[in-house]
Length: 170
Image (cartoon, one colour):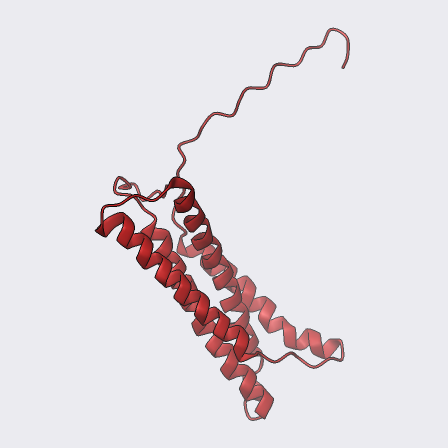
């Protein structure tokens, strides 16, 4: 510290309004397009490296369907607690559910785009057994990711409280 120079005392952070906007369609579309470009690039990059492009397993796709079911059940339980029964949710639980919903919506859009791009990369190889398997399994992955995004957005909206006329979330 230099002589004669004083630094102001740091102010404590001021509390903000504590609100968050619902996830819009624009970020989801941008993330899905980025995922599609990455998914489409897997086949040419694998060929350039002299490797075989990976296959899409049904276990990964099944895990996405399971995630969509869990998110849908959590959305139903949250909506029922807050709106139908007139109950309350502890603030930290509501924020946790909201953050899970937002992150699952974005990651679901990214993965769905990647599966779609990967399927598109193999459309010209649909007559070959592994090409058909990659397209069919990737398409099932796109559907699963669409369900994940939908369930996540429903969960996000279920976290709204009664006084949220502005569309903000707690």
